[in-house]
Image (cartoon, rainbow, N blue to C red):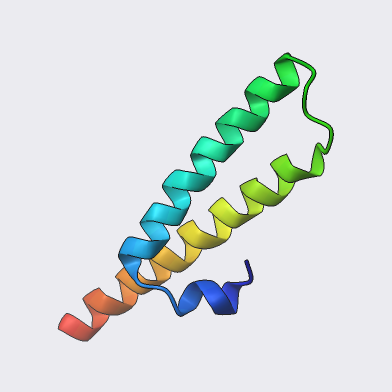
Length: 69
């Protein structure tokens, strides 16, 4: 997902995306230990999605606190 797409989502949707991505990352790591994972780039892509989503979630929270003041 691109940052533009993530910015259009609500905070709840971002939190859900982060949680699901972390679960996928966990599954990928277990697949590595069992030597079942074929495409290791999925780990890197998933980590980047988590980082983007967390950054945008923080951005939205900061903007909401500024607007409240």
